[in-house]
Image (cartoon, rainbow, N blue to C red):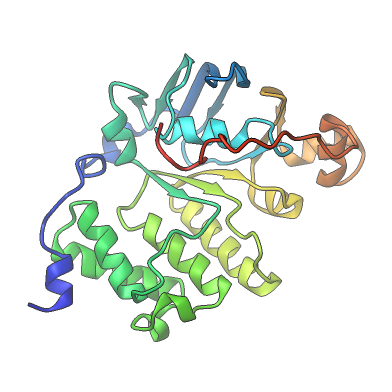
Length: 285
């Protein structure tokens, strides 16, 4: 049996195999968060009673200093972490009772690249398609489409360990797009990339957004947020300080988006505690 056939035998993952008819979801807010609170077992309140909404097809930015609550919020929205309190709707589905439907509706491009270095791009995408319960034909068609769009066709059969950082990031993005997610969560999507590689990712994300995909971006690169986002929320100490368009925020701070960030979160480097019991931000709790 060929490798392609082994990978494409149907063993759908129960947490991700739910198929969603997005035509039935039109007209609803992509993300709606009401009074979200998350308190960890050490009584640390990482997120403190926040509420916000992201519109269908919006490119939304979620900014804040290290330790402000960004990663915790994203983990909750992507079903990796249970909230302490609050009501959350993702793509029209209720967090908690409809987590499987939510997982079938979203893609999550994590800060670290999550690929098998000892496999090719093609093999990585075939495996991802299999885990999503896609047919062999669907998987091969979608993988070929994404490799072409992200300019990875020429290296599709090479081991990922030999890729540049930009190539790995593009392949990681392809992996989370295999099942046509309705909402895409992006955690520092261009961290460590050179300007040319960053521009390739930006251009593709813009095109994807124009096609209707809702984007939820966290980044410390203010130019990235300014270039891509229609609206921004700034969170600090677990609370959302302000939500507005980049243009309005820059006008209020009388400067760049860097000035906006400093204006609303302070000038100093934040004190952070180190704990060997800290949670992995991408492991489901």
